[in-house]
Every structure is written in C-alpha cells, then in structure tokens.
Image (cartoon, rainbow, N blue to C red; front, side):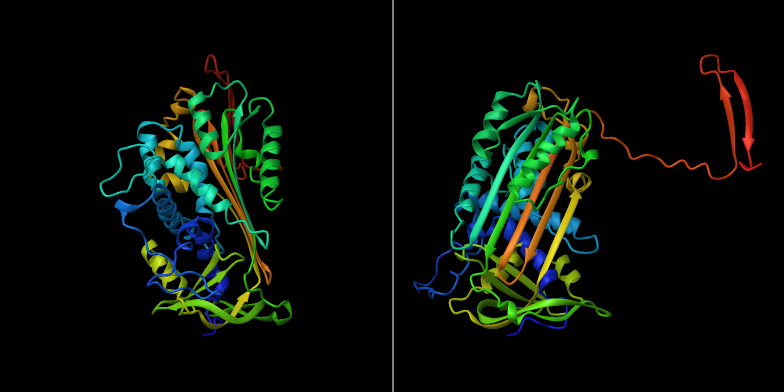
Length: 444
C-alpha cells in the first residue's frame, strides 16, 4: 500500500513518531517476543506487546507508562500552537524526575501527578506505583543505552547538576541524583559570573548532543538568584535498517493544507514493512539498524485529518496502532517520505504549571535539595532537533530545569510617551510639587 496519499504526508505526523521514539517506549514494546509459539521471520520486527496489567508490571514498565502518559498530556498542550512540534518526553521527564528528588509535600505530589510517576506515596487510587521510581529511571536509562549498535545505531543519554558554589546542597539529594541519574554536581557561580556559567552549561549540552543544540540557555534564562540548574541531554543517530536510495529522491508536492502545497525532496523506497490501517489513519513502522528502535508514522486518511486525530489521541490507541503494524509477515509497502528537519525550543514553565504543578513555580517546597524552602523553578527550557534523510535519523534533545530564589522576573510593561501627556517634578520627601506642566508638541 503506498504511503504517498494527497494529504498531510508522513513528515507532519512523524512528529507524533518523535514522541514515541524519544520517550523510551521502544525499550519496552519493541522487545516483545512472537506469540503463539511462531517464530518471526528473520527480516521482521517482533510483534509488540500490549500494555501489561498493573499488578504484574515491573518498576521500569510503570515508569515507562508514566513517561508515555506524560508525553500525550504535554503534546496536547504544545501541539495547540501552529507549525511543527517536536518534544522529547523522556528528556523532560528525566530532568523533572531529578528535580522531584528534592521536592517535598504538595510540591512533590503535584509533580508526581503531572509526570504520572509517583516517587513517594500516596498515589491516586488505581495508579501503579513503582517500589523505587528513581532506580527504575536508572534501569530504563541503561536499557536505552543498550540499543547502541556499532552497525549504525547510537543513543546517548546524560544528566548533570550545576549548582551555585557553597550553596550547601544536602548529601542525600546529591547521592540520589548521582546514583540513579549519573548527575554529578558541578559548581558554578551564578551570582557573580552568570554568563560564564551559562556558557559552561551550554558547552556541556553541545558536547552531549554532538553540537546539534548549542545555545539551550539564553541570557534571560539565568538570573542573580539562580541556585541550581538540572540538565538532561539525549542524542540519537540511527541508520534505517532498510535505507532509501538517494537516486530515487525526487521533488514532489507536500500538501500542507487543502489550498497550500510546498515542494519538498520526497524519498522513495519499496520494501516489506509493518503496516496497519483503521478508519482514521495508516500506521507505518520504519525500523532502524538493530530493530530495537523504530520511527512510527501515523498518516491521517483525510488531508486535514491531523487535528482531529490529535484530539482523540490516547496511549491505548498508540499501543494498538503499533501492535497492529507489526505482524509476523510484513507486507510490501511503497513508501514516499519527505526528507525533513525540525528545530523546536520552548520554556515549558507555564505549560507545566497549567498541567497541574503550579506550586513548583511559586509556593514551592524543594527543601530536599538544600534543607530550605528558598528555591523554586524559574524556567524549564526544552530544545530539540531532528533530521531525517535517506540514510536514517539524527535527533537531539536537551532540557534544563532552572531553580531560582524569589519570584521570576516579570516582563516589562510598555510605557510609550508618543502622545500628549502631563508631567510634574516633586520632592519625594516632602511631597511638594516643584514643577507641573504638560507636553502637547515636542517640536514647538
């Protein structure tokens, strides 16, 4: 079945695939084994497992399901804006999980509810709770790194803490983030050398992402009261298991809307792939080398069907799509997919607050970090990059949770004196008015 319908072709909906890819779902579902005692063909992907029952789930499965639930909640928020979107729920979750290690009381509970990962009890009735969620993050991280294949698949994950010198962070907090996230504390001076600290953090992010994300933090992201920045970086470079031939790539129309086309380089490949179809969409699975990771492309049947598809998106639906797209016998598919790239950057502070964790940004309790309640989140900066071509995919993501003191700076209120106004000069101590006048025409 061809994947070149005159509609929103594969590249737009591959942004949904980016969520699946970078969230760590592949670490769980793509590792499932064939059912019914049948052996999968040598050249196919093992069929995917549907969600496990809560009572039999491992801690890693519980955390993975939590990250994926957070992925769809977050996508519903950021997806409301126009244009391309690309987020890494795994990167954001890891950075916020480290932050949650220092959260206490209502702040901790709100963060857990938004992340769908409960680090300490209680949890809402019916929600699965990992015995040790931080340890599960460490296991998931190790599992993802095990996807590396010298034949053409590289996945790197790194974490780090950047703390104000002599801040006095609690050893318990430092030990937990070092043990489960590999995030050693690096001391910087936000108070007297904020720009140098910013450049140091950005250089680390650039190194971890192979220079794909060079300026994660902007000057306005750090301020004098900053006490700690928690960072996560993800880098992926993976070749397709079945590569496109660059000679087959031809310019073709991409149908942005009913009335707008753009010309793009359209790659073409005919081979056997996992493919599923329902009344709303066709779902294609393109595996990478090693077949542990794959890009999942959800193509709406209607040209303008992406918005409706996103509104009804659930994790159950995503699981079913991917499960159905991985039969024992993949079918011949003629794939046409744009060569494309996406860059995305956002401060997620307001978004996360609206999702249900407002205390983290105002009346916060992060006393588990330094023994005091003087820190709150001032910014959650997230940046992503992806490039998809005939050879495969290169993608990167980075997240920085900035912890500061006091209220975040307010945006300046505009005051433009471009029309007649009244003015006076007074002595502030006595209140006496020394001069009083008006300006009608500055040119007179």
